[in-house]
Amino acid sequence: CGGAAFNRLGADKMANYRNLNMKYANKLREDIKAMMDEKGILLTELADRANIEKSVLRNYINGRNDINSGNLIAVLKVLGYDLQI
Image (tube, rainbow, N blue to C red):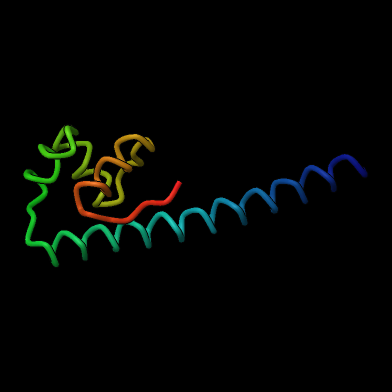
């Protein structure tokens, strides 16, 4: 019984992290959309300049899929985001 309770608590904690990460991911998507609007850059141009497939970027921005970190960094650099790593 103790093991089941521990596993449930672990699953609840992981669900909270997923929800928090999703919140940040959605905020970043909104920020990217705002930067695109601010700079007047279209999705196709952004994808070309970041060297990413247009469909991958479109699906990411629309929240259908995630994007790998390298592609995300390329997008942010094209948009002029000052990324400190």
